[in-house]
Image (cartoon, rainbow, N blue to C red; front, side):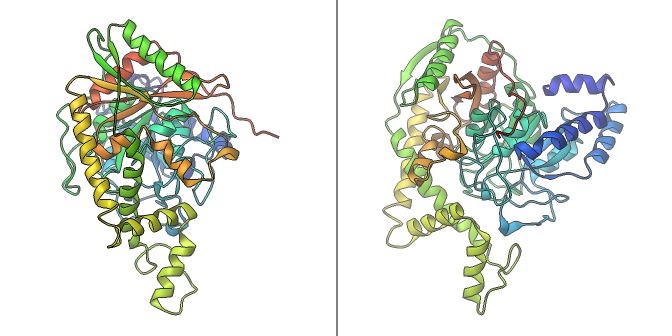
Length: 477
């Protein structure tokens, strides 16, 4: 059920916040042992719901008052662990809240728990978590995507109506696509990164994940805003609390050329055809620099990841190895034992591209390419209102079929990395299903600060799209 319907039920006293939160907790208790979306359940959720109900009874409720919300486990909460799904931060409870959490608490939203992720948000399938696998509610033998796989799976499974995720190279949009929900990567700077454990700081962005674009817009209206603790945060010029279906007559939408499998291609073209029937002008668009986005993204993200994760040395906080006879041994063994394989790979790649002999040939060129790509997008948006493309070249795949070749795994960011490198707003919304019942996501990317414009385009499409519910979760014998 979406936020507006829940808001009406709560404000009309047809259901209490306590009853709503209990229903979510009951569903989590009954089914999350199969899905594995949550790493921690908030023991104070009922108490928070009681506090929210007082505000509702006093007719002082905000958009999210009393609404249960899941939070990705790389977003700091001062009353629940923030582990980043890593052994390195096992049991760590931050002494402060992230800015987005402060904004949620200010409205008396109910934080229901912390959601699983790839370790330190590094990965694309939620399989690198130190604690557990998260499974796709549409087929529990399949991955939910990553790194915000726990957030996507929780919303798709009905454990909570909305959730927060983070997107660096596609980590909101890809799992949203795999799990058949809507997920938005806002324009870079729209939402404060304060209290979000960094992976690649120049691209990290917190964003909403929900069953609809309308709910994403409502959640965005709460979490967006200037934060003096994040110098990159700005006030969005288009901030509002809702998005209505819009007239598509005369809208110019570019369909990005690409190489993707048959069912995905059919679904994307069908969505483009729908927009065209409503009066939009659809034209195929070529992005000459598209093939370079993956190497540029991984060079920059690995470089920044290696710098950000250098703080985990066993001295200040986090895991500390007991097998050390010197400072060098302490740092080396702490990182060897505390980090997982994929995290170590990214750190090593980052150190490699930042070393003196490689800096000019790799990192500097990647940053320059990101600048050229931004110019290319700016030129395109002089003509087009938005761009349409697949989120991923394939739909969700089984755990048995996770690519073992790192290069193949990284290619999954082919379509999503462009927005990450340039700071553009981009979202995924379901546009079809495979013959096996797996969701297919349509990616809509807009110009800077046009977050609500692309949300309106998605909401208009969603009004005529029949969204399917995942089947009941059964473990394969």
